[in-house]
Image (cartoon, rainbow, N blue to C red; front, side, top):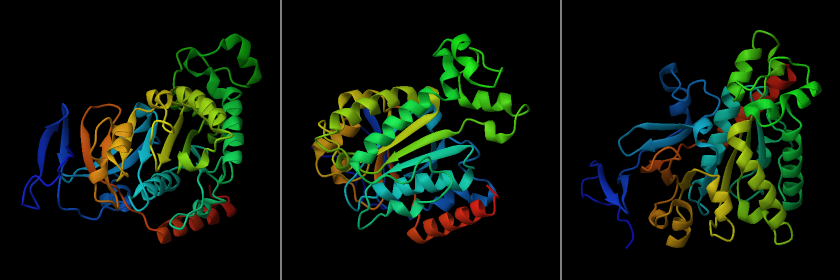
Length: 331
């Protein structure tokens, strides 16, 4: 039995019901929600200055919902063409590059160019860890590089993962101790000792269509490396936002699911895809264009949310501004 979101004939009436032992908040009337609502709300940004925060959307009760990846770790975002999935990924990327410098946040974008989304629009911004990646061979190479780079970076000294005495000689810092267990603590500690270039940036890996970029030849290798990175992500300040059109168990494996606590589903093809992501059906009956179900990794509440929208022209303007600032050495 599919979830029926039209619980009342009154378009303005919000309600809450229990379904499969989970509380679901739903609504019938949708209002447009823009990313600027989060960033420029009365000059008091809802997102704040927390690097790991992101805009989720607007709930049925009219609440602007934000979340913190430092608590959640990683996100899977499912949805078909026209569902709003790629628009959500664009708003995520834009909210990062608008608010923070490259020394604070770096981004890796993995996505094929489609008729509706051109990820190459971000090419050249200083936040990119690598040029935009658009095929499976480069995806495998990039994930390998990221794993190797992380294991040789200063962030391996966090969380007491390695023997400090044996590895600290590779770095010119004497501030590491087992008590430093996060990038935020590390950056706070070095703030008065070094310039900002010594900060450890958070790393965001955005994969637009995981199922399309994984071919039969390299599927196993990519999933193995990805699982290793997913396990390191929360402790090392590396966060994955993995999009997929077909969240079947063949693509979205059980091992990956264990390391991805936050689930977002826009309109999907059928109830099996909805169950694969959320653990319950219902996403197959969503309306599209940003209508989504959101399951946070910190609560069992399943929200129906309207995702924030950012236009392609706004993205182009932002990218041009950031590129200009880069040329002028302002960032």
